[in-house]
Image 1 (tube, one colour):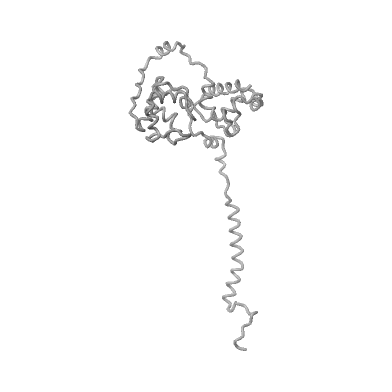
Image 2: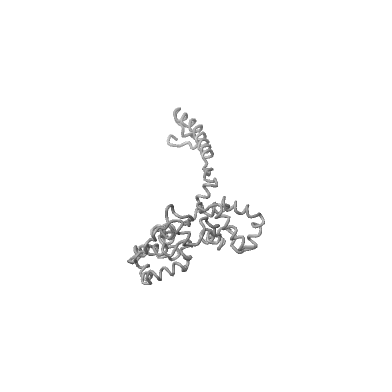
Length: 265
């Protein structure tokens, strides 16, 4: 019949349709191959520069650190409250780490201010809660620590009077008053440990051998002091060079290592 439809008839009715179908049968596979090749060629890869020792050490820098060495031209006890705050206190007292009262938070500082400068100074000197003595910088003088407290408290509702800066004395006078010779003494390994190394080597953070753990230290001590010092200078694993404090001299690092070894034999 005229109205019947042939189920086996092709949808291609004209020469133009045939040409289009033939072209597509070639183009579609070719485009697919090109896309696959592009995907393989442009596969994301790690930046080789990101794996250099310098780049790794930079990423492993600690949140906060204490730097040794006197400021150029400064005298002992002459750091301002703001300088001490930025160098020692800001890590905890800006973000409120481990319950430290944030600078400017009058509600948090209110009951502390009531203790008076003398009470706050006593707490900061001895340490309290998660805060180590003198905020972790044993080199701070009482006046420097007091100025840092005044700086933070006065921005948080207090009106404390800042201790006056000491008058500068001639080097010879300073040495005579201290009863010490002109030459500097050997670095204090315990002091450096308490300021730089204790965060990892007391708690065993990231696999660091705990101070006093003879089993953990024995194979390290067996490599020799020079090897241990070189490892500390260059960094290893999660430990950045010089424990993350590039201002330390080689003698400072050696003194800290010697102290830890002496406590772990």
